[in-house]
Amino acid sequence: MTGLDVVTPIGADLDGFWKSALAGVSGVKRIAHFDPEGLPTQIAAALDDRTLIEEFRSEAALDPLEPRGVVVGVRAARGAVARAGAREPLASVRAGVFVGTSGERHDLRTLGDIAYASRPAGALLTPAGFIKEFARRAAAGRFYRIWPQYLASRLAARFAIAGPTATIQTACTSSAQAIGEAYRAIRRGEIDVALAGGAECIVSPIEVQLFCLLGVMSRQNGAPATASRPFDARRDGFVMGEGAGFLLLEDAEHARRRGAPAVAELAGYGTTCDAYRVTDEAPDGRGAIGAMRRALDDAGLGPADVDYVNAHGTSTPMNDRVETAAIKTVFGAEAARLLVSSTKSMIGHTISAAGAIELATTILAVRDQIAPPTINYRVPDPECDLRYVPNVPAPARIRAAISNSFGFGGHNDCLLVREIER
Image 1 (cartoon, rainbow, N blue to C red):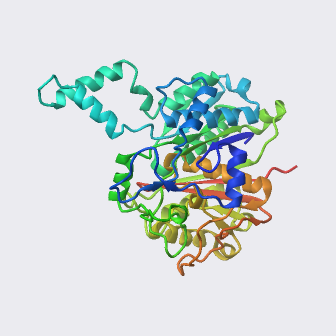
Image 2: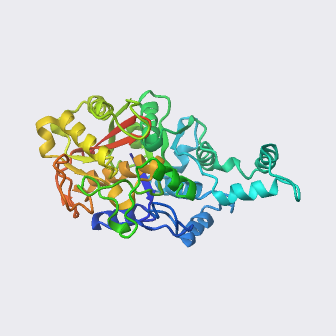
Image 3: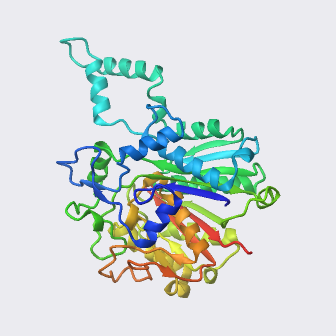
């Protein structure tokens, strides 16, 4: 991995994010870019700074119709490419782009505008009329930008990437799986370099209400900064977040030939599916266990070789309990010494972008030999009894680390990072 960058609610670039993460800053607050009054959950770690988004749009010469998720995705990708000095190597059939995202969502105002515009004066709204107006606007180029595959195409065009282009949508594991599949494509010898990551900006009235109906959202509206409490006994659900993260992955020899120093090595990838229930992992943690074991086997490492786990750690009662048990099963006696922390305590759950942002966090932990904290950890849960790095970072020897991502529908992905031997 020769370059990486992120956009998060606690930092608009990699350095700003890392400084805030080590300081334990929370990006969760009352939703400001729409009125959440009446919703059960009225808080999120949203990218609601319109000035910042417009700065990103202007820097990248993006037009006003580009959705927020595309804007921040392009911003993170440009940062990763610049840090790796890889613009020229990407312009090749030996380069690929792999993106995890769900695309943009229509909000209620857009749908309402289409509905009212679709009916003649004094006439009733009809499904046929709505579809006709929707199709008219789509044909005019206004809606194709919200499709999931649009960001990958946008990045391929911007960097002249002529190799494989893939969009992956496996809910909360999307960008982790995109990075894993990029890694596999390089190992198979199909490409030499890949731009991989994800972006997500879907904090909207519809999405917030949907997750509330699923019963997985925190309702700590009066105390947003402490609402995301992974592994704490008081946790009551996750907090939605927004952001983007991208990495430059290269074949080691390719990076050496062009004199690009590596930040860390992506040494292992494991992916499974348990498909237990839409919102929950299997209670025995079999999917998570399988993904972690496959990542270890892929890297040729054992439990004693890993020092840090960046947990999926959503702050839902079931996820944190099952993930803790899964880590203990995989690492056995070594689990007691592992440092474990959840980035979601600070930036919420960025859904499709979570895997990429959290892998970037894991890389920085290995690079700087320090484990970031799990903030808001105050009341221990007897069923969650690992070393969660409570509230302040922990300097430590970190030779290798794993980043866990577990998604709605039973998707499980684990990425293993190893330090570069100097």
